[in-house]
Amino acid sequence: MTIPATTSSGAPADPSAGADRPALVVVLHGTRSPAGSEDAELLRRRVCDRLPGTRVDVGWVDVHEETLERTLPAAGPAIVVPAFLSAGHHVTHDIPTAIERTHGRARTTSHVGPDLDPALRDRLTELGPLGDGVVLAPAGSNHERANRGTRATAERLSALLGRPVEVGFFHSAHPSPAEALARLRTAGAEDVSVATNVLLPGLSQKRIAALGLPTTRPIGVHEALIEAIVRRHLAALPHRPY
Image 1 (cartoon, rainbow, N blue to C red):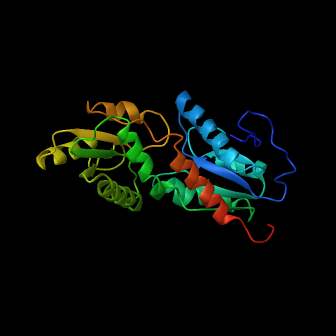
Image 2: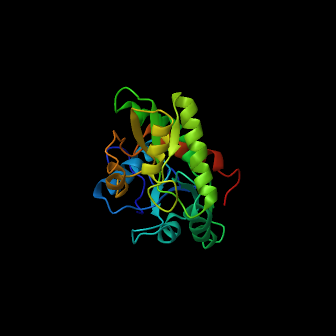
């Protein structure tokens, strides 16, 4: 999704204002959900509002035809922020590969996942009074490093909430959400909620809903996500021209 920066009203930003600044490319996985695509554009606009004069684009690594490899050449010199919750194959391979083909005109930051614990907490709060256990439901990865990162998120969230949090992967890894729920039940939890650990709406919601438990909506366009993206972009700004 390569769209010149705009203001929140939709009016084009002054193209000369950011002429000497790298663009910001927010990288997302991709979704077949129209609601997910709408959230992606809303996220782009919200980030753009925080960075006046900076071109802000969205680059996809899967599902969409407008992949990151197509977005980067149009963006020019750019800082790439992976809007991913863990460092799986897309973060460790696909994004660096696309950046390598820019011949030094783009650089990447760390993924945003470690900064989104407050967003997970807020989504749980939206469900009402919190019970005595939480299933954290991410997609899962074939890369154990990414899954370890998700388990670390569960540990931090447990400390934040003061309640046990078990990870239940709904794709690519184990334990499953049902197995995570069983672990909590065995430990004595009776009132369990599910924290949907994905950014955008998609098929994950149907899979997680099969548990029949109170379930949060995806993280979506939360202030913690916007702040994580903006902070990484500003920290990565070069001290000299590209």
